[in-house]
Image (cartoon, rainbow, N blue to C red; front, side):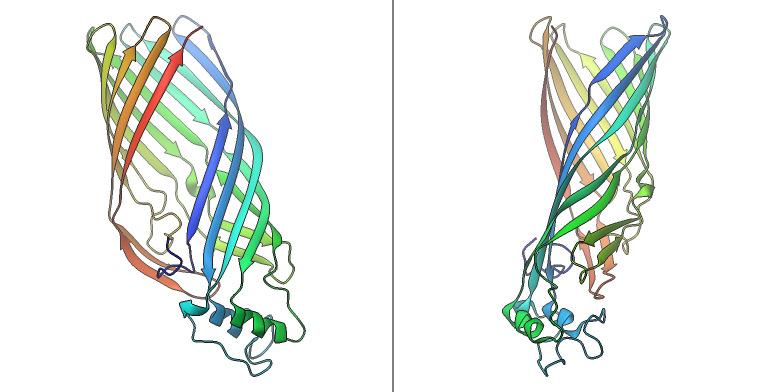
Length: 322
């Protein structure tokens, strides 16, 4: 977001990247049953940034400076709360490496149908990193004059814990003839473990910051079809309904303003040779209008509004057998 937007004290940047290496193994237990197992090595890095309300800090609602706050220690004043001209800012970044696992079974139901069950474990991360600040000169003057001196906004180490959720999927595929096959899937994701995001600062004056999340478990329902045009080309189409784990406008923040999504997808698979295939897919996500009415716990800033969003995803994949 722009640094001057109305929700700047909640979020200006929210970025998470993960890299997951997943070696897996599979074997046929019987003529009808196959089993698989995988091990996950997952790296995560995240950056969170937002503006800081210098006037609110000056008035010291957390009581660090005693009665009257920093502003009144030396009869200093700062502009009214919410004055963007005097904003400061914070940027937090951190990363972690941790492990998980996944397992699945595939059952052949006669000649034309298959049933699959897949489980993926949660992965708990403890991100270590740094917090960096840009402090408004007027606020810095107030802080420098405070007695005793407070080193509130010096760069410091941070720790944040987050658990990426476990999931369970049940899938079904059936051949409707030589050319057409249909597919269906239901996936449950355990987002209810994400109740809050707590960030602990090494600087003892900063303490910790807790952001309530209160996410719920969610479901995703999908249905699709493959049509074998010829020996080389397969056409694909599908639709999915993807439930948001964020149920309440009060729990929804500008960092993740998500809502229920409907996926409409199309694709094509092409056999380049007996050993190589290429797949291309496109999805358009229709996102429900998203209401937001969130109040932050630290300073009481409230962001109220509505998001109107959609998403386009283009993907390509190559498979090589050797």
